[in-house]
Image (cartoon, rainbow, N blue to C red; front, side, top):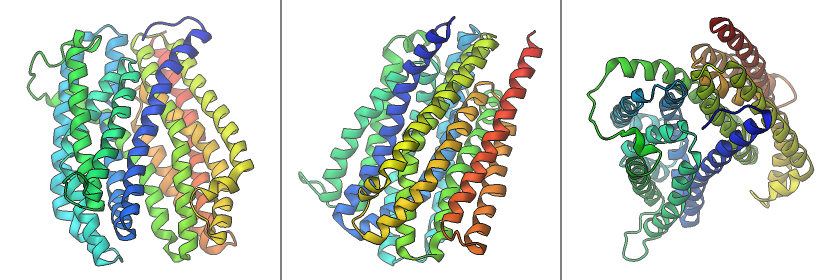
Length: 451
């Protein structure tokens, strides 16, 4: 990254960082998509098992990997403030912390997996596949978390195209091993949906090794000599990482897990309603990759400018990102309104479910507009290392406002299942407003601090 002087230069640099992040996020989304689709081709039972396993794993992974996102603003501010000597130790402490988190996940899973699965009202065969899928996946947890720590360093340097390259490399690897292990091709055992877990674990090892090789041997990463000295564990560094990272991780966890909670509450309705809800949520999650990617890009550029004490530039980047997200949300919102029926056909041919999906997608338009503000604003706040108040706002928005309001509208009004979507949109809107106010206050506070 470099200092920019005009809005045009900022826009160009921002897009150079953003586009690879977006491709990377879509690639990671596609990996889970292929696991689900290829397991479904093997058998409906394997599809159900993998879907349940994924629904348990994704909130845990996104929440804990969110903790490691703290590496990005810390490193970005070190680089922006010309404190490059601090970078290697920060990265290695991030790697140590990622291994620690991996071990905690595996130990916790060993004790809680059976009670959680046994508490679900699912067929025994589906329960068995979900358990074995998660056990298979666990062999790749350590390298996956290490990769997230290394990726945060790569992105902090503005070299997001490298992360994109690694993710795009991982996709065909994952698909090939899915094919070999799910269906038992070329002499490999036929494992069904469980094979998707092993395929993902193998892929995680490979992308961690690729990231290590890139940082060790390629410019500009090797200039930081991250692996030239083996630092001991520093509790002070861990405190800094977790002080920023835990609120980020919890914010992401509360946002992701609320959709799982709504899906569970939807069990009061018919199978068709649940299927339509899941299809609409799947498409909304796909669209969410856009504001999420903008959020991640803002953390990098805002952190860089704040580290260099160029507060006016940090402010410009912040609102530029929000504006881009809003413009894009309006564009794909209009397309969603125009082509909602055509989009619904992607998921089903059942007439009743098609109508329900089309109706859910109408609410998704408002949903996306709120996300287009709150996600980028959170990213900008992380660039300022402001995460504690952001976490509390996210908790209140999703779980104190969004979910209870959705439950009331769903059970005590004529909105029915759509009430949950109205509640979620209301929570996101409350988050967008309060977080925007928080960003304005933080920017004012930094101006006073460095005036």
